[in-house]
Image (cartoon, rainbow, N blue to C red):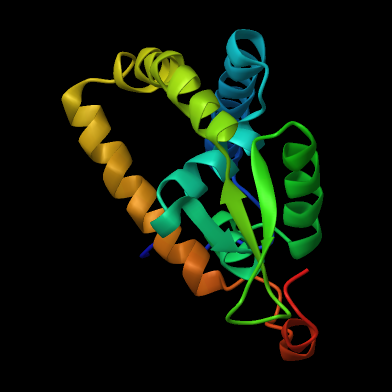
Length: 174
């Protein structure tokens, strides 16, 4: 008699799937925590601050509208607004009026924000190298790149992002 193979219940994880998920979750969270702790210890900034600073550093004119910063970070608008407020208080960024659209606000990288990035990146990159690249063989790195791309495709297909609220954008960026 032929054995009938059934698909696992999609609402439950097998023991092997659970083990993989837990290892992946621990690795992902540990990586984030380690990077944040290194930045806090060495440069007194958070990983979130560095993300905003790096996004602005790579932007034309070292500035972005709030809605573009929301898109670039994948954060909620309120989180971006609160983060920018904290960073402005520290002198890393400044808000500027947008002549092209009075409802919008530019978030501009200051000289101090640029200095923080320049100071933090070498140590931050060295930490990434130790944890990610030195821990994996070139073959493992290639596999991880493929896995990351596949998972990112699945994440985009899942479309977990909140629906675009045209009314909110019509009221302005912030």
